[in-house]
Picture (cartoon, rainbow, N blue to C red):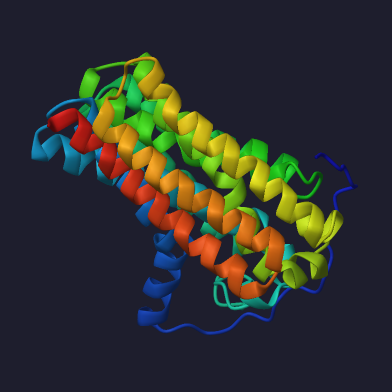
Length: 305
């Protein structure tokens, strides 16, 4: 499922600098961290912590803050690096840099300082393993996904999706004091889940990706191919989700969650394959959010009951 294309040159006129009020500046600084994206990442962190043990409220708080800083730092650097293609896509043209409200170097420095703060906070409040895992997530998202894969291959989101799988490992390590094999299960689930979730979204905004010459799967391979790929990766997600039960890491309560949620994930994937409509793509995208949230809640219930 891989197609490689040349990375588009960073062209296009620089945006005209626009004066910004203090309130707008604060809003833009927050926007750099992509807070909506962070919500799900932090949820997987918190649920992984309670699945791993019984953390204190303070440990949960500082781990969440540290994880938020790491995610926000990666997002800010992403804003800086992708400023050229953000100007070409309708949904991103009003971001702080392409709109002209912020100089690119500001986003870069914000991203780097947030990342540094995240590392030291997690190292002090949790442990060095959690800090290193959060840093690994930053490196993967910025270096592997944003700078290397995003503009070059249709496998950008498959391989790059590993970045979003680090937060539950960070939470797990914060509770256990180091790396634990069981933390690989939520890591693998998020990795597999990212492809169908994001490809469903990419179906809705593929014109933007095409305008910026980003080789997302529906742009390069077409809708039909993407629908089939979503079915395949949804099936992989379901299989991966039951592996922890086979190995004994989770029990029957979690298994019930995995099976019920998995059946609906497959149903929605086949509906998209059959109908191929925007409504079906949106439905799958939204359900995927519910799927991951409830599945991770199932991990916690299984661990506590």
